[in-house]
Length: 113
Image (cartoon, rainbow, N blue to C red; front, side, top):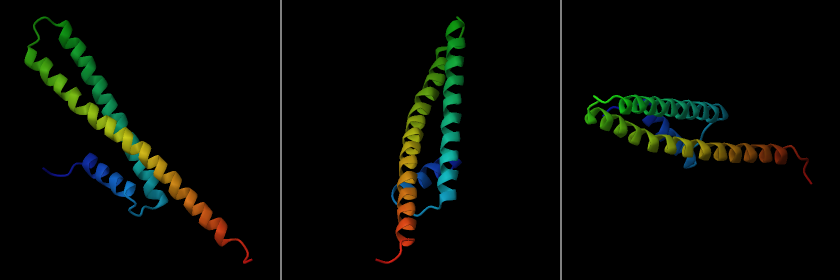
């Protein structure tokens, strides 16, 4: 199976969360990409839920079609939860890195005692 953008994004997020080096620009980019992917997953879930409502309202809908859409929603929810979790962890990690950088800057600008 070839890597897809979401797999690459998830892998890089995990690397950064495991203390791999990242620039401020990369932290921002990863945050934006993770947020965009989470929003895309939410939209897909909402679309599938609307489709399920339509399918449930149609008496002639085959159960296989409903089951396929339910499987789709069931596969998207864990991916969304994971991305939300990684995004929250990334925000925490970015704050830690920014704080450490600011402390370093403050300490290096102090005159020697």
